[in-house]
Amino acid sequence: MNARSMSPPSIHGPVTLKSSLGASDTVVSVGAMATDSVCSGRAGASVRPSREQAPSVVTASTQAAATRSRAAVRVVTTTYESRRSSVRRRVMDRLSLLTVHAHPDDEASKGAPTLAKYSREGVHTTLVCCTGGEEGDLNNSALAEPGQPFHGLDAAATKRLLAELRPGELAESARIIGFSRVEMLGYRDSGMPESPANSNPLSFHMADVDEATGRLVASIRANRPQVMITYGDDQRGYPHPDHLKVHDISVLAFDRAGDDEWYPDAGAAWQPLKLYYSVWSRARLTAVHEALLRLRGSSPYDEKWFERPNLDARITTRLHVGDFLWARSGALRAHKTQVDEREPFWFGLSDAELAEVYPYEDWVLARSLVPTRVAVSGAQGEGAVGDGVQPAAELEDDLFAGIRTPARS
Image (cartoon, rainbow, N blue to C red; front, side):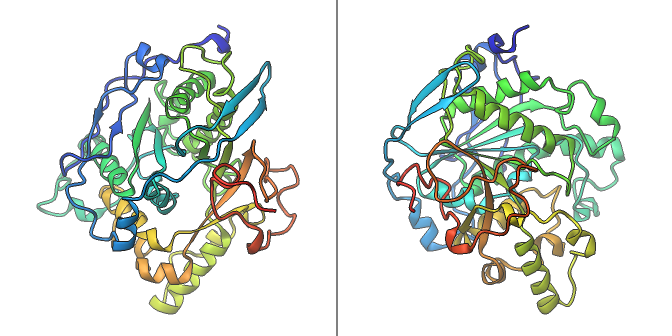
Protein backbone atom coordinates (compact mmCIF):
# COMPACT_ATOMS: atom_id res chain seq x y z
CA MET A 1 0.00 0.00 0.00
CA ASN A 2 1.23 3.47 -0.86
CA ALA A 3 1.72 5.22 2.48
CA ARG A 4 0.86 8.58 0.95
CA SER A 5 -2.69 7.38 0.33
CA MET A 6 -3.04 5.63 3.68
CA SER A 7 -5.81 6.57 6.05
CA PRO A 8 -4.90 6.36 9.74
CA PRO A 9 -6.53 3.19 11.08
CA SER A 10 -8.91 3.02 13.99
CA ILE A 11 -7.16 3.03 17.33
CA HIS A 12 -7.25 -0.15 19.38
CA GLY A 13 -10.10 -0.24 21.87
CA PRO A 14 -11.92 2.51 23.72
CA VAL A 15 -9.96 4.42 26.31
CA THR A 16 -11.59 6.49 29.03
CA LEU A 17 -9.60 8.97 31.06
CA LYS A 18 -11.12 9.54 34.47
CA SER A 19 -10.15 12.16 36.97
CA SER A 20 -10.95 11.62 40.62
CA LEU A 21 -12.17 15.17 41.05
CA GLY A 22 -15.09 15.58 38.64
CA ALA A 23 -15.76 18.11 35.86
CA SER A 24 -13.58 20.86 34.46
CA ASP A 25 -13.16 23.31 31.63
CA THR A 26 -10.09 21.44 30.41
CA VAL A 27 -11.19 18.94 27.76
CA VAL A 28 -9.29 15.67 27.69
CA SER A 29 -9.97 14.28 24.23
CA VAL A 30 -9.46 10.56 23.77
CA GLY A 31 -7.82 9.32 20.60
CA ALA A 32 -9.67 5.99 20.63
CA MET A 33 -12.22 6.83 17.97
CA ALA A 34 -13.78 5.40 14.85
CA THR A 35 -11.75 5.35 11.66
CA ASP A 36 -13.85 8.01 9.91
CA SER A 37 -13.48 10.29 12.91
CA VAL A 38 -9.71 9.94 12.89
CA CYS A 39 -9.49 10.51 9.18
CA SER A 40 -11.57 13.68 9.28
CA GLY A 41 -9.57 15.09 12.17
CA ARG A 42 -12.62 15.29 14.44
CA ALA A 43 -12.21 14.79 18.17
CA GLY A 44 -13.33 11.53 19.67
CA ALA A 45 -14.99 10.91 23.00
CA SER A 46 -14.00 13.34 25.69
CA VAL A 47 -14.25 13.78 29.41
CA ARG A 48 -13.65 16.84 31.53
CA PRO A 49 -11.32 16.36 34.50
CA SER A 50 -11.89 18.59 37.49
CA ARG A 51 -10.89 22.14 38.02
CA GLU A 52 -13.40 22.74 40.83
CA GLN A 53 -10.55 24.38 42.68
CA ALA A 54 -7.09 25.30 41.53
CA PRO A 55 -4.17 23.17 42.73
CA SER A 56 -2.97 24.48 46.06
CA VAL A 57 0.44 25.23 44.58
CA VAL A 58 -0.92 27.73 42.07
CA THR A 59 0.32 31.21 42.92
CA ALA A 60 -1.89 34.27 42.72
CA SER A 61 0.16 35.77 39.89
CA THR A 62 0.05 32.69 37.68
CA GLN A 63 -3.63 32.09 38.41
CA ALA A 64 -4.41 35.66 37.37
CA ALA A 65 -2.49 35.14 34.15
CA ALA A 66 -5.02 32.50 33.14
CA THR A 67 -7.64 35.20 32.64
CA ARG A 68 -5.62 37.18 30.09
CA SER A 69 -6.75 37.28 26.50
CA ARG A 70 -4.86 35.25 23.95
CA ALA A 71 -1.59 36.78 22.82
CA ALA A 72 -1.77 38.62 19.51
CA VAL A 73 -0.40 36.55 16.65
CA ARG A 74 1.48 38.10 13.76
CA VAL A 75 0.43 36.57 10.45
CA VAL A 76 3.36 34.63 9.01
CA THR A 77 3.53 33.10 5.57
CA THR A 78 6.10 30.39 4.96
CA THR A 79 6.84 28.03 2.12
CA TYR A 80 7.79 24.48 3.05
CA GLU A 81 9.39 22.24 0.46
CA SER A 82 8.18 18.69 0.99
CA ARG A 83 9.26 15.76 -1.13
CA ARG A 84 6.65 16.36 -3.82
CA SER A 85 4.94 19.68 -3.10
CA SER A 86 5.33 23.20 -1.77
CA VAL A 87 2.76 23.95 0.91
CA ARG A 88 1.98 27.59 1.69
CA ARG A 89 0.64 28.08 5.20
CA ARG A 90 -0.67 31.06 7.08
CA VAL A 91 -0.56 31.24 10.86
CA MET A 92 -3.97 32.58 11.70
CA ASP A 93 -5.72 33.57 14.90
CA ARG A 94 -4.35 31.50 17.77
CA LEU A 95 -1.11 30.16 19.08
CA SER A 96 -1.04 26.39 19.41
CA LEU A 97 1.57 24.03 20.86
CA LEU A 98 1.58 20.23 20.62
CA THR A 99 3.85 17.98 22.67
CA VAL A 100 4.37 14.25 22.08
CA HIS A 101 5.12 11.82 24.91
CA ALA A 102 5.54 8.08 25.22
CA HIS A 103 3.73 7.24 28.47
CA PRO A 104 1.53 8.75 31.17
CA ASP A 105 3.84 10.62 33.61
CA ASP A 106 6.31 11.71 30.89
CA GLU A 107 4.30 14.91 30.49
CA ALA A 108 4.88 15.60 34.20
CA SER A 109 8.64 15.05 34.27
CA LYS A 110 9.47 16.67 30.92
CA GLY A 111 8.30 20.20 30.29
CA ALA A 112 5.32 20.57 32.63
CA PRO A 113 6.30 24.11 33.77
CA THR A 114 6.75 25.23 30.16
CA LEU A 115 3.35 23.90 29.14
CA ALA A 116 1.72 25.44 32.20
CA LYS A 117 3.28 28.78 31.34
CA TYR A 118 1.95 28.78 27.80
CA SER A 119 -1.44 27.43 28.83
CA ARG A 120 -1.91 30.34 31.19
CA GLU A 121 -0.91 32.76 28.45
CA GLY A 122 -3.88 31.49 26.45
CA VAL A 123 -1.96 29.19 24.12
CA HIS A 124 -3.87 26.11 22.96
CA THR A 125 -1.86 23.17 24.33
CA THR A 126 -2.22 19.58 23.17
CA LEU A 127 -0.69 16.51 24.77
CA VAL A 128 -0.35 13.45 22.54
CA CYS A 129 0.39 10.34 24.61
CA CYS A 130 1.39 7.38 22.48
CA THR A 131 0.82 4.51 24.94
CA GLY A 132 -1.15 3.73 28.07
CA GLY A 133 1.87 2.83 30.19
CA GLU A 134 0.68 -0.75 30.64
CA GLU A 135 4.18 -2.07 31.38
CA GLY A 136 4.83 0.35 34.22
CA ASP A 137 5.63 -0.96 37.69
CA LEU A 138 4.25 0.13 41.04
CA ASN A 139 6.91 2.65 42.03
CA ASN A 140 5.25 3.94 45.18
CA SER A 141 5.63 1.37 47.94
CA ALA A 142 3.26 3.31 50.19
CA LEU A 143 0.36 2.11 48.02
CA ALA A 144 1.17 -1.52 48.93
CA GLU A 145 0.96 -0.94 52.67
CA PRO A 146 -2.00 -2.27 54.70
CA GLY A 147 -5.18 -0.41 53.88
CA GLN A 148 -3.86 0.76 50.51
CA PRO A 149 -5.17 -0.44 47.12
CA PHE A 150 -2.20 -2.62 46.17
CA HIS A 151 -1.80 -4.34 49.53
CA GLY A 152 -1.69 -8.12 49.17
CA LEU A 153 -1.96 -8.17 45.38
CA ASP A 154 0.14 -10.56 43.33
CA ALA A 155 2.06 -9.39 40.26
CA ALA A 156 -0.76 -10.04 37.80
CA ALA A 157 -3.37 -8.27 39.92
CA THR A 158 -0.98 -5.37 40.44
CA LYS A 159 -0.57 -4.97 36.68
CA ARG A 160 -4.34 -5.01 36.18
CA LEU A 161 -4.93 -2.36 38.82
CA LEU A 162 -2.13 -0.20 37.43
CA ALA A 163 -3.72 -0.33 33.99
CA GLU A 164 -7.02 0.74 35.54
CA LEU A 165 -5.58 3.66 37.51
CA ARG A 166 -3.07 5.20 35.15
CA PRO A 167 -5.57 6.86 32.77
CA GLY A 168 -7.07 8.74 35.71
CA GLU A 169 -3.63 9.81 36.86
CA LEU A 170 -2.93 11.18 33.40
CA ALA A 171 -6.21 13.11 33.39
CA GLU A 172 -5.41 14.69 36.74
CA SER A 173 -1.88 15.56 35.67
CA ALA A 174 -3.21 17.19 32.49
CA ARG A 175 -5.72 19.19 34.54
CA ILE A 176 -2.99 20.53 36.80
CA ILE A 177 -0.71 21.49 33.94
CA GLY A 178 -3.62 23.05 32.08
CA PHE A 179 -3.62 21.15 28.79
CA SER A 180 -6.41 22.17 26.44
CA ARG A 181 -6.58 18.68 24.99
CA VAL A 182 -5.14 15.20 25.54
CA GLU A 183 -5.10 12.64 22.77
CA MET A 184 -4.14 8.99 23.12
CA LEU A 185 -2.60 7.37 20.04
CA GLY A 186 -3.77 4.01 21.36
CA TYR A 187 -0.64 1.86 21.32
CA ARG A 188 0.48 -0.50 24.05
CA ASP A 189 3.51 0.24 26.21
CA SER A 190 6.51 -1.62 24.77
CA GLY A 191 8.33 -2.08 28.07
CA MET A 192 12.02 -1.62 28.71
CA PRO A 193 14.66 -2.56 26.10
CA GLU A 194 14.82 -6.30 25.30
CA SER A 195 11.83 -7.13 27.50
CA PRO A 196 9.17 -9.59 26.21
CA ALA A 197 6.71 -6.71 25.83
CA ASN A 198 8.84 -5.37 22.96
CA SER A 199 7.47 -8.11 20.70
CA ASN A 200 3.78 -7.63 21.55
CA PRO A 201 2.08 -6.93 18.20
CA LEU A 202 0.00 -4.17 19.80
CA SER A 203 3.05 -2.41 21.22
CA PHE A 204 4.25 0.96 20.01
CA HIS A 205 7.63 -0.59 19.26
CA MET A 206 6.05 -3.01 16.79
CA ALA A 207 3.78 -0.43 15.17
CA ASP A 208 4.27 0.31 11.49
CA VAL A 209 6.09 3.65 11.29
CA ASP A 210 3.88 5.04 8.52
CA GLU A 211 0.72 4.02 10.36
CA ALA A 212 1.87 5.54 13.65
CA THR A 213 2.99 8.70 11.88
CA GLY A 214 -0.47 8.93 10.30
CA ARG A 215 -2.14 8.92 13.69
CA LEU A 216 0.08 11.77 14.82
CA VAL A 217 -0.48 13.67 11.58
CA ALA A 218 -4.24 13.49 12.21
CA SER A 219 -3.71 15.10 15.61
CA ILE A 220 -1.47 17.81 14.16
CA ARG A 221 -4.01 18.68 11.49
CA ALA A 222 -6.85 18.77 14.01
CA ASN A 223 -5.00 20.98 16.51
CA ARG A 224 -2.90 23.08 14.07
CA PRO A 225 0.16 23.77 16.21
CA GLN A 226 2.79 26.23 15.10
CA VAL A 227 5.19 24.60 17.59
CA MET A 228 5.82 20.92 18.27
CA ILE A 229 7.86 19.38 21.10
CA THR A 230 9.22 15.84 21.07
CA TYR A 231 12.17 13.76 22.29
CA GLY A 232 15.63 14.26 20.87
CA ASP A 233 17.56 12.20 18.39
CA ASP A 234 20.22 11.36 21.00
CA GLN A 235 18.60 8.94 23.46
CA ARG A 236 21.76 7.23 24.66
CA GLY A 237 20.96 8.23 28.22
CA TYR A 238 17.60 6.42 28.22
CA PRO A 239 17.10 4.24 25.12
CA HIS A 240 13.51 3.18 25.83
CA PRO A 241 11.92 1.74 22.66
CA ASP A 242 8.87 3.97 23.01
CA HIS A 243 10.97 7.11 23.43
CA LEU A 244 12.92 6.23 20.30
CA LYS A 245 9.68 5.70 18.37
CA VAL A 246 8.25 9.01 19.63
CA HIS A 247 11.20 10.81 18.10
CA ASP A 248 10.95 8.95 14.81
CA ILE A 249 7.26 9.55 14.17
CA SER A 250 7.38 13.15 15.40
CA VAL A 251 10.05 14.14 12.88
CA LEU A 252 8.18 12.38 10.08
CA ALA A 253 4.86 13.92 11.14
CA PHE A 254 6.38 17.40 11.22
CA ASP A 255 7.34 16.92 7.56
CA ARG A 256 4.22 15.11 6.38
CA ALA A 257 1.44 17.03 8.13
CA GLY A 258 1.83 19.93 5.70
CA ASP A 259 1.86 17.75 2.60
CA ASP A 260 -1.68 16.91 1.51
CA GLU A 261 -0.44 13.91 -0.49
CA TRP A 262 0.32 12.18 2.80
CA TYR A 263 -2.75 10.79 4.62
CA PRO A 264 -5.34 12.67 2.54
CA ASP A 265 -8.18 11.44 4.79
CA ALA A 266 -6.54 12.74 7.98
CA GLY A 267 -7.77 16.33 7.66
CA ALA A 268 -6.62 19.43 5.86
CA ALA A 269 -2.85 19.79 5.56
CA TRP A 270 -1.22 21.91 8.28
CA GLN A 271 2.48 22.73 8.49
CA PRO A 272 4.00 23.28 11.96
CA LEU A 273 6.70 25.93 11.91
CA LYS A 274 9.10 24.91 14.69
CA LEU A 275 10.14 21.56 16.16
CA TYR A 276 11.87 21.36 19.54
CA TYR A 277 13.60 18.53 21.38
CA SER A 278 13.36 18.26 25.14
CA VAL A 279 16.66 18.01 27.00
CA TRP A 280 17.66 17.59 30.63
CA SER A 281 20.73 19.76 30.60
CA ARG A 282 24.01 19.00 32.33
CA ALA A 283 23.80 22.50 33.81
CA ARG A 284 20.51 21.62 35.49
CA LEU A 285 21.75 18.22 36.67
CA THR A 286 24.86 19.80 38.18
CA ALA A 287 22.93 22.60 39.87
CA VAL A 288 20.38 20.24 41.43
CA HIS A 289 23.04 17.71 42.48
CA GLU A 290 25.17 20.36 44.19
CA ALA A 291 22.15 21.88 45.92
CA LEU A 292 21.10 18.50 47.28
CA LEU A 293 24.58 17.88 48.66
CA ARG A 294 24.62 21.32 50.23
CA LEU A 295 21.09 21.33 51.63
CA ARG A 296 20.40 17.63 52.28
CA GLY A 297 23.85 16.09 52.59
CA SER A 298 23.33 13.54 49.81
CA SER A 299 22.15 13.26 46.23
CA PRO A 300 20.63 10.42 44.18
CA TYR A 301 22.58 11.60 41.14
CA ASP A 302 25.71 9.47 41.27
CA GLU A 303 28.56 9.35 38.78
CA LYS A 304 26.51 7.29 36.31
CA TRP A 305 24.29 10.30 35.73
CA PHE A 306 27.30 12.38 34.81
CA GLU A 307 28.49 9.71 32.38
CA ARG A 308 25.45 10.32 30.22
CA PRO A 309 25.95 12.39 27.05
CA ASN A 310 26.26 16.12 27.70
CA LEU A 311 23.94 17.83 25.21
CA ASP A 312 24.30 21.38 26.50
CA ALA A 313 26.12 22.47 23.34
CA ARG A 314 22.89 21.92 21.43
CA ILE A 315 20.64 24.03 23.66
CA THR A 316 19.10 26.91 21.72
CA THR A 317 16.26 27.96 23.99
CA ARG A 318 15.98 28.63 27.72
CA LEU A 319 12.68 29.52 29.36
CA HIS A 320 12.42 31.03 32.83
CA VAL A 321 9.70 28.95 34.51
CA GLY A 322 10.41 29.59 38.19
CA ASP A 323 6.81 30.72 38.75
CA PHE A 324 5.45 27.51 37.21
CA LEU A 325 7.39 24.77 39.01
CA TRP A 326 4.17 23.89 40.84
CA ALA A 327 3.04 22.29 37.56
CA ARG A 328 5.89 19.79 37.67
CA SER A 329 5.50 18.86 41.32
CA GLY A 330 1.71 18.76 41.17
CA ALA A 331 1.61 16.70 38.00
CA LEU A 332 4.19 14.26 39.34
CA ARG A 333 2.14 13.79 42.50
CA ALA A 334 -0.91 13.05 40.35
CA HIS A 335 0.89 9.92 39.11
CA LYS A 336 0.65 8.27 42.51
CA THR A 337 1.44 4.77 41.25
CA GLN A 338 4.59 5.91 39.47
CA VAL A 339 6.03 8.57 41.77
CA ASP A 340 6.83 8.34 45.47
CA GLU A 341 6.90 11.87 46.82
CA ARG A 342 9.31 10.71 49.52
CA GLU A 343 11.96 10.08 46.86
CA PRO A 344 14.69 12.74 46.66
CA PHE A 345 15.06 12.00 42.95
CA TRP A 346 11.78 13.83 42.37
CA PHE A 347 11.26 15.91 45.48
CA GLY A 348 14.67 16.40 47.06
CA LEU A 349 14.24 20.15 46.57
CA SER A 350 11.08 22.12 47.16
CA ASP A 351 9.67 24.24 44.35
CA ALA A 352 11.02 27.35 46.06
CA GLU A 353 14.49 25.81 46.40
CA LEU A 354 14.51 24.63 42.79
CA ALA A 355 13.47 28.10 41.67
CA GLU A 356 16.56 29.47 43.39
CA VAL A 357 18.86 26.77 42.03
CA TYR A 358 17.70 26.39 38.41
CA PRO A 359 14.45 28.16 37.44
CA TYR A 360 14.76 27.20 33.76
CA GLU A 361 13.75 24.60 31.21
CA ASP A 362 16.05 24.06 28.25
CA TRP A 363 15.12 23.12 24.70
CA VAL A 364 16.82 22.29 21.41
CA LEU A 365 15.41 23.91 18.27
CA ALA A 366 15.72 21.08 15.75
CA ARG A 367 13.72 22.54 12.84
CA SER A 368 12.45 26.00 12.01
CA LEU A 369 10.59 27.27 8.97
CA VAL A 370 10.64 30.85 10.25
CA PRO A 371 13.70 33.07 10.76
CA THR A 372 15.30 32.70 14.18
CA ARG A 373 18.17 34.40 15.94
CA VAL A 374 19.65 31.06 17.04
CA ALA A 375 21.35 28.39 15.00
CA VAL A 376 19.07 25.39 14.49
CA SER A 377 20.77 22.45 16.17
CA GLY A 378 19.94 19.87 13.52
CA ALA A 379 20.49 16.17 13.87
CA GLN A 380 23.09 14.46 15.98
CA GLY A 381 26.32 14.17 14.06
CA GLU A 382 25.68 17.18 11.81
CA GLY A 383 28.15 19.40 13.56
CA ALA A 384 25.85 20.72 16.28
CA VAL A 385 27.48 18.78 19.08
CA GLY A 386 30.83 20.09 20.23
CA ASP A 387 30.55 23.49 18.58
CA GLY A 388 30.41 25.20 21.94
CA VAL A 389 27.55 26.27 24.20
CA GLN A 390 25.70 29.32 22.93
CA PRO A 391 26.03 32.27 25.32
CA ALA A 392 22.92 32.67 27.47
CA ALA A 393 22.28 36.12 25.99
CA GLU A 394 21.94 34.54 22.55
CA LEU A 395 19.44 31.85 23.53
CA GLU A 396 15.76 32.09 22.64
CA ASP A 397 13.45 32.79 25.57
CA ASP A 398 10.20 31.90 23.77
CA LEU A 399 9.21 28.80 21.80
CA PHE A 400 7.10 31.07 19.58
CA ALA A 401 9.99 33.42 18.76
CA GLY A 402 9.78 34.32 15.09
CA ILE A 403 6.08 33.40 15.00
CA ARG A 404 4.30 35.94 17.18
CA THR A 405 7.08 38.53 16.83
CA PRO A 406 9.82 39.00 14.25
CA ALA A 407 13.10 37.31 15.15
CA ARG A 408 15.40 39.67 17.00
CA SER A 409 18.82 40.09 15.47
